[in-house]
Amino acid sequence: MPRAVATVLLTVYLVGLGLTVVGNSGSGASLLVGVIKGRLFSPWLVPAWLDLGFDHPVTYGQQADADHRLEVRPHGDETWQAGPGMNTSGPRAARWQRLLRSVVSSEQEPGREGLLPAGFGTALFATCGSDDIDVRILIQPRPERQLPLALADPVVAYDARLRRLSGGELQLIKTEARREVAPVAPVGGTP
Amino acid sequence: MNQPAETPAAGIAASLAQTWEAFWFTPADSRPLAAVRFAAGIIGLLACATYAADLTDWFGPAGLLPAETVAAWRSPLAFSVFDACGSVASLWAAFVLLAVLFGLLAIGLLTPVVTLLVAIGWSALLHRGPMLAGPADDCLAVLLWCLVPGTSAEHSSCDAWLHDRLGWDVARPRVRTRLTIGLLQIHAAVIAAAAVFAQLKGDVWWNGTGLWWVTTREAGRLVDLTGPLLASEYLCNLLSQGIIAWELCFAIAIWFAPTQRLVARAAVVAWPLIGLLIAEPLWGLTLACFTLPLAGWFSATTE
Image 1 (cartoon, rainbow over the protein chains, first blue to last red):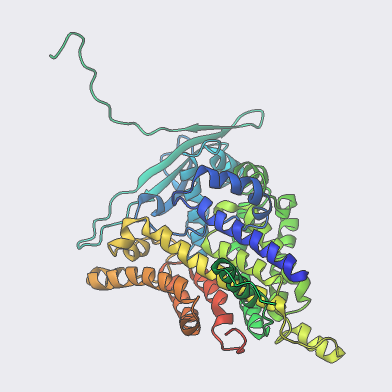
Image 2 (cartoon, rainbow over the protein chains, first blue to last red):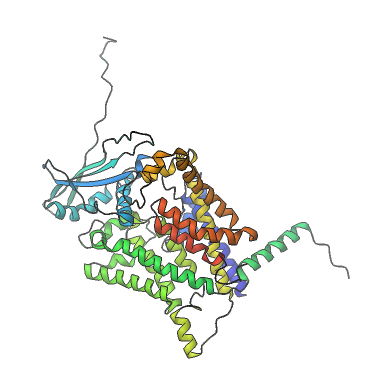
């Protein structure tokens, strides 16, 4: 009898494990798999931190997994200063990198835009000694594997102004990057 | 009376049932789990150390990651006891308690309770800041949960010493131990296979420049291989594609009796080395830990 119970529990868990791998990785997981996993397995796998896809690619060589850097300054100042955690190394630095990557990537995720930078508010106000600050995240593009190494300038991946209003509320004003646009065509045909 | 002839389907079913029974329910010696328990405790302490210096900066009352922000960010199904730590003192108390639990796990004191508590505590810490968690944290969580059903304190532990002094139950091969070893084996293979699939989605692992892109990431880097990789394209390709080949080989060879012990022993060296190369040392150590029971160094019952 105990073996039958163990067999049932193992089977249920192994099905859940399979679904977490298929459903969490972007490897062509179907919506159905995601729904089944979400309804039947996630409620008990998520709290135990077991709803994992294990899809750890290490790198895709993309800008998204290059080095990120947090910089802050009181609004109106010219000089940027390094944000907290930017002078760390090893696994500790890796955690700061994940945090900054999450800030940048969550801007593309509905419901999560601006959530983390707004949460940074209290801590960064104290860092800058001001209730009106600019925050930006830079990405350092990596050089191709060829000599001489061409080190490009950092790219601004996130830029926002964060301030505390008189009622204690936080206001986040995201700075959108200017894009090049085509010239307006004159009315009445080609010039 | 003649027995009805067995159909092919029934034969396959019987064979599957036999294989299932042998894989999960053959009583196994728990010596290998003592090694896993000790290693998991030490890795847990190291993982805690990567949080310690920034704990207040992240999770403190004036930290970068307020509990309400994280609660809005993570899955609504998740929760963390660390959310309730509203002061620096309570945050540190909870964190030190978790570190102490990892210490108790390593020495094997009150192990059945500690193993469960440390798995819950580690999951709670990860849920407090899911955006900080990486591959090593995921694998450590799985490793800790795998240890829960097993009897990892029957050997080389304070519990074993105490039981010996008190004349309590004697260590013996148990089904629970086999369950844990089976879970470790399955997860080791799944993690390696999932890593291969994830990596092969990107061109850089096909064209052999994967390790170059990892090395040029300075933050978190432990070994700077930029020079050697620049000097030799062959070395860059060999190491990048060697990592993929190893992961694939591991995920398959761990299932076959003739290769299992060999690949498990190689894994104890290979995973930490790969972890060092890709700047994920704790991930490498944790994966090595998964394969310890299959290496056959501690007993002969895993065959």
